[in-house]
Length: 109
Image (cartoon, rainbow, N blue to C red; front, side, top):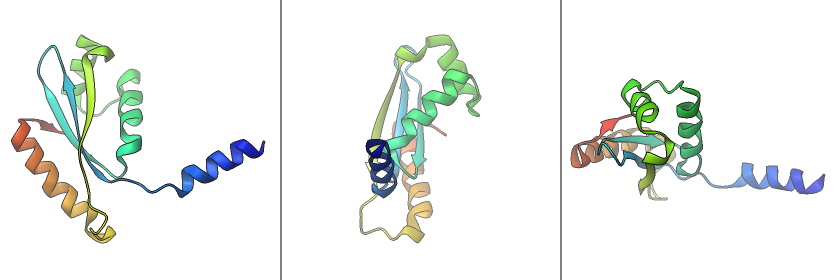
C-alpha cells in the first residue's frame, strides 16, 4: 500500500492555514464566527460534531437540528499572513475573531 503511505506523508507535510471562518444558517440569518489552527480541516470537524449532536455551542447545535445541514454554509473569512510568527497566532486569531464577530454580528464559537 505505498499509495496510502504517500498520502499520509503528504497530509502530514502540508502547511496549515490558520484563520477565521463563519458559519451561516440561511433560513434564520444567524451566523457564528470561529478561529482555527487550520482552515482546511475545521469544516469537517464542525460538521462531524453537529451531525453527532455533540457540538458544545448549544445555539449552533439547536439551529442545526432545526434547519438541517443543507441550511448551513461555511466560509473562510481570513487567513493569517505567512509573516505572522507562530508564537503570535493565538493572540492575532483572538483579535481578528473579535473584529469579525463585531462586523458580522456573529456569535463567537
